[in-house]
Amino acid sequence: MRIEQPSFNTHAGTDHTISNGIDSSTLNTKIIKSIYRDVMQGNSGCQNGYANHCRLVFSNVLV
Amino acid sequence: MSDIRFFEIILKVVERCNLNCSYCYFFNLEDQNYKKHPPFISMETVRDIVQFLKRSKTTCPNLTTIRIDLHGGEPMLQPKSQFDAMCTIFREELQNDYQVEIGMQSNGTLVTESWIELLKKHNVTVGISLDGTKEINDRFRVDHRGKGSYDKVVAGLRLLQQSGIKAKPGILSVLNPSYDPALLYHHFVHELSVQFIDFLLPDFTHDTFATSGYSAEDYGAWLCKIFDIWTKEDNPSVQIRFLYTSLSALMGYIPALFLGGTPIEGYGAATISSNGLIGPEDTIRNTDPHIMEELGSVKNYDISSLMKTPLFTRLGQSLLRIPQECENCCWKSVCRGGKALNRYSRSEGFNKPSIYCNGLKMFYEKIASYLLRGGVPDDVLLKSLQINERDSEFFIGHLMKLA
Image (cartoon, rainbow over all chains, first blue to last red; front, side):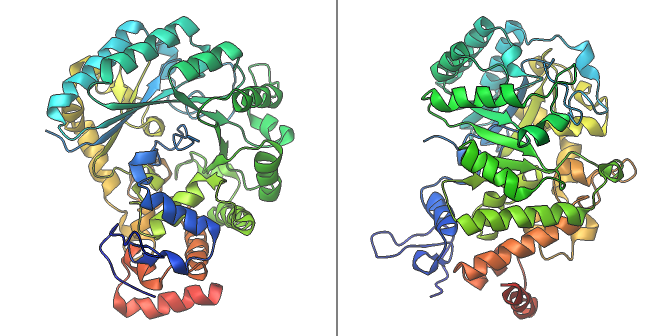
């Protein structure tokens, strides 16, 4: 299933979601699903510290 | 006015270290200016930094988040009372203007219960530097008498893990192709129970890479092996940062810039020395021994005026520009030429592809193939990589063969 969507548009509330053209129901590894989920929750880029200076502290480790 | 939204300060709170790691970019490469700096940051400099950030509120209207990375040297050499006062000032003075994140990169050897209480009090996240097993770590990460640091580091790591501290400590590890990736993964994940790991490509430039004794392909093969190990286990609670962010970038989610430390829209970073001198991102210091002294004190700037200085303008322009040799590379939109320092040569500045170029190509090919197998549509990959329709069939076909 390929549905072109503007980035970060989602179809929440259905049995699957679509973000950035990726349909969650087609993903078949836990790691890829996790990345997808992080993005859906807004945990990407600067927001969770991934934009850190290369040597720096992990800020994405809140549990 | 500046469009900066997220600003990161690499703050040299202590410019001395109880370890003497042979590869340390701060103490054992070209820039030796730390010798002229005070060992510890002063409270006056801390207040100067607060004012620098407060001044930025009006010139950077979109600035929402300040990240302060307590860095060294070894930050835990700082007197605890001073650390407490410093963090109190940062939190209290800035909390009305910004979201403030504070992190610390430590060698882990000085962790105590009293440090943990302070870290908890000020909500400071911690990254620990560790290269691997005792045998591996103690080759390079030694004290000033040549004694390995592993036992103390792991004791510190265990204390942090058992402390109930809100943020689990991550590990930063300098990649060496001679280390067995399976052994490292097992040690970090299954023996030390660490979930957040990053393997850092060493800080070589085109002028120094030959001394590494390895080729770019050696590094690339190592990254591919650790990727296979990680994805075979398929445990998303274990995050290897470079691998995770590279996958994210190929899925179109994160502008890949930070992968190479290159500037991105809305993001700014600066290093502040213990004496209050402000300069560019920390590893750049080894491209020119005077670069960290060019701008003078943090007292003279706000973020907007800092970004407009000739030094930051020059660096920004040269780092944003993808090296000419990368123009026809299919990975250029995620790689952007690689990490800034690894692009550098005395003769051509930052205008060459990363010294790890051939290895990075192997790695990106590997993970793109993994994503296709994992159900990510090929048009998502093509869009992330900005590959045109004419080349798309060949490109996807090639990746599918690998898959």
